[in-house]
Image 1 (spheres, rainbow, N blue to C red):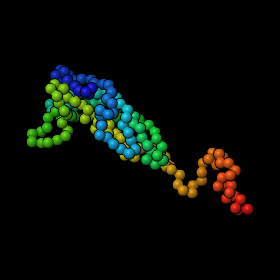
Image 2: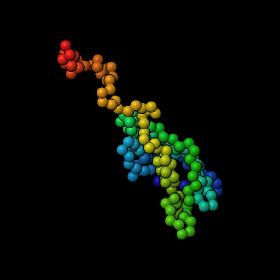
Image 3: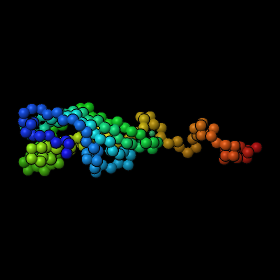
Image 4: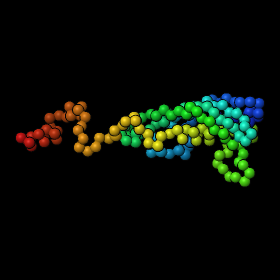
Length: 165
Ligand SMILES: [Zn+2]
């Protein structure tokens, strides 16, 4: 587990943690028809002890294999979180059950949930190969010129021309 911080060292001051975490380890349950988390997520974080938890700040960087929601073209989308800032609790408040508490094992707290949450929030709802992607050509739309040039004389088009004569 690469994303663990030593709570004893944090007593003495801010810790910097950087490295990368495989997508399979970060979000094994992630599933989306148009996006695949297959590349490692690079993290560069500062962790500071607070009375009720850990203040985590820094940046995350990865890229995601996508399929365009409009034209279905595969493309790679860079995903970056520049201003991560999150207070991760180490203990739930009395009588409260919450998922927002970091897993702690002995002296080590695991920051994986913080990174996972911020990367998932940064993903688009509908990935597009470009902001002005016009999608698949609709039926009846004029074909691309190079497609027509490739067509030989015995195509359906020339057959249609003959019918007109
Ligand atoms: Zn597209």
